[in-house]
Image: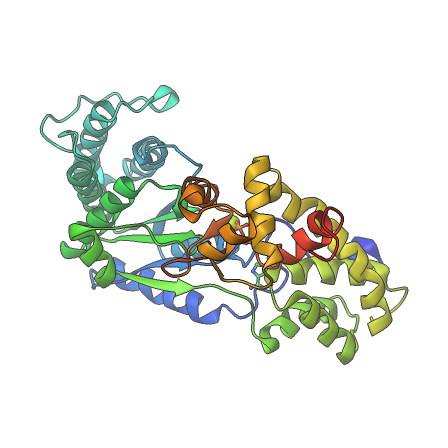
Amino acid sequence: MDKVRNPFAPGAGSQPPELAGRDRILDDAKIAVQRVIRGKPTLSQILLGLRGVGKTVLLNKIEQIAEEHGHLTSIIAAPEGVPLPTLIYPRIHQVLHKLSVVEQARISTFNAMRALRGFASVFKVEIGDFALSVDPETGTADSGNIEYDLAELFVKVGEAAKAAGRGWTLLIDEIQYIGDQDYAALIVAIHRVNQKGLPVLFFGAGLPQVAALSGDAKSYAERLFSYRSVGALDQKSAELAIRNPIEEEGEQIELDALHAIVGKTRGYPYFLQEWGYQAWDTADRSPIDVVDVDQSSQKALQRLDDGFFRVRFDRLTPREREYVCAMAKLGDGPYKSGDVAEMMKEPPNKLGPMRASIIKKGMIYSPSYGDIDFTVPLFGEYLVRNWIKASAPGG
Ligand SMILES: Nc1ncnc2c1ncn2[C@@H]1O[C@H](COP(=O)(O)OP(=O)(O)OP(=O)(O)O)[C@@H](O)[C@H]1O
Ligand SMILES: [Mg+2]
């Protein structure tokens, strides 16, 4: 069929033609952004899910919703190992810059700018292009204790936003890369603005490995955050994700072809986009039938193996690859660390540091104590397809 009109959008963060099965999350976000601007107690949301389930797409959508409801927004994709002050400084600077033109927010914005300046200097943020012309306000957000200072800074930003009649929504993607201490500080800061009824809201998204929180941050997180798991789409939503975009282009797909796609992808959003894309391109004419789907499967798998899966695999060292292959040889997860060690013929305690390093890379996670599993759906099957059969037949 006409490749130019192919509606599907496989790719990290690509807006899908049909954002299926996420109405609850989006409706809750709509309510939250409106409540917080009215000073009502509001839960921030943390979206947790495996690779390719649509977390980034959801965060982008929530950012749009927040903007539509009068919020200034800051969206950050956390890279590995960058401290939170460095990430957040330019974003807050931007927000304050926008607020500074609002007459009734002049004074509170100026105060927030000064707090930001103090914050930047105590955390040694490279300010470069974002240098501020204000003097720091000594004694505000500059103690050097991030838990304390971030909260003070957020309060100042919240007060400026409130004075302007706006809200501020902070969205952080890949939160698993935020260090535990920074994450705890973020939670304490959200707690503080919440207590004061300031219009500040936080949305996070990341892999389902919950940070090892302790103390105040832990108890606040349980009360302030609603943790939502984002997973594969259910049958109906997965069908919608494929059928609607095709019909919107004025074409059709047969029911058994639709079922075949949902079956092969198990409803995982990234895979749905890839299969939908290849099935469309493979079909000579509408309606797309089950033969088209079968024919396109090879190509869809190949593309995933060369891209989505491969980029993850490439980040591992040779020993780490042995580790994940040992997991895959055990069949479907979750896996017991002890079983993996046995498969590798190593004492379990020797593998602890390697397992930790693979977790840090975001390749595996611990769904519950003593268990591990892949963060990439169907990764075990990828390994079997590409890396195990050849080197260890039948193993
Ligand atoms: N609700 C949905 N319905 C259909 N397709 C979707 C949906 N959500 C996301 N997708 C598609 O899935 C793919 C992956 O989306 P996205 O990059 O947001 O996932 P992610 O969870 O952020 O993945 P990662 O953990 O790798 O960053 C994209 O091609 C996107 O178009
Ligand atoms: Mg993402």
